[in-house]
Amino acid sequence: MTIPSTMPATTLRSLALGVAATVTLAWGSPLGAQQSGEGPAAAGPKDAGDLVSAEAIAALDPVLASAAGRADRILYRSRSLNGDGIVVSGVLLTPKGKAPAGGWPVVSWGHGSSGINDRCAPSSVPNQDGKVDLYGYGGFVAGLLKAGYAVVATDYEGLGTPGTHPYIVADSEGRGMIDAVRAAVQAEPGLSKSWFAVGHSQGGQAAIAAGELAETWGRGLDFRGTVGLAPVTNVGQAYNYGSPGPVDRGFYLLALQGLKTLHPGLRYEDYLGSQALRMLPETEAECTLKIWQDFSVDLGDRLGDHQFTPQSPEAALALQPWLDAQSVPRGHTPGPMLLLQGDQDPSIKVAVTEQAVRNAQAAGTVAEFRLYPGKDHYSVLAAGDAGGAATDVIQWLDSHRGR
Image 1 (cartoon, rainbow, N blue to C red):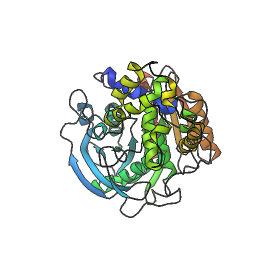
Image 2 (cartoon, rainbow, N blue to C red):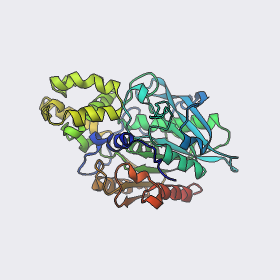
Image 3 (cartoon, rainbow, N blue to C red):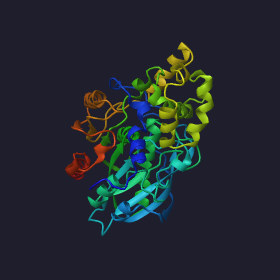
Image 4 (tube, rainbow, N blue to C red):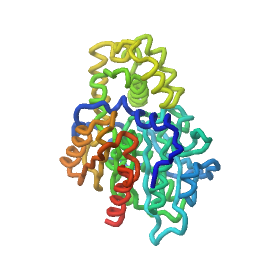
């Protein structure tokens, strides 16, 4: 498997830097952080994962089309963290050919940051050629299909469907990944109930959260393990009471908007200066490439850091536990875990991912870490013959699919 040579440099930069706000970290996440919403013991309601619709994707990127026997945009039911019924969108892809005995195992794929506007949903956003390539992840996903895995790729809650996307809210992402598997099994009789949670960057956080929910929200499915590529783990240390540098400003605004879905009383004016407040609507309207360009490049140092930080000590103290609650891992995962990243990653600190693995191990999870020399935040997804992790990921999945 190779990353398409036609992928635009701007897309690569967007993916490489799209989570910088949440991952400029110094250390790992604390164990035992309280989960948001209904809590870790809550099983999903009976309609969670019910398939609403499945429609063939007409404009599929050629790299995905070459590997997929079926490619549908799906809608399925889930629950928000406040218990409201919601509809979530995503993509279902199956390998070419006939399903093996017992069905294709499923990879539930979690994408990296794309934005919070519906037009940024990977299931429908077109690339520069007008094709759906899952926001630049087509090459990696095609490799999974060629290896014999069906892939279901959620857009996450509120991204592509009504409602606000709870950006970087772990349990919302995890529910979206689990319920996507249920919907995929309903849509395609050739699928097994065996599944893995696999994700990159923000999607790495989502995959870890999904694994932690596998025995509760995911009850009835056959969970086999978690893979996080350059994963977001310690959200609490990312802002450290709310203090992003120039690179992180736009994504700090996205994080505030995500937290507001959990904490409706959050007042933006408590966490942003007057000039930054006027920029907030742009993060609601644009995808991550534009946000990166406008907030991290064009602004530079023209706005002082005080514009993008809590405006009082009281606000900072209120913000910190909200951020801490989204740090992962938070406890035991019933299947094994593999976290991987490049040693040249400008966004995810190696020490942070190593600490996340130690935290998982301390909670009783069978977890390991792999480092890829010379690879950065996105190039770590390259194939093994290019020095990346994709081949190792597939071999790891193969070794655990029949455990």
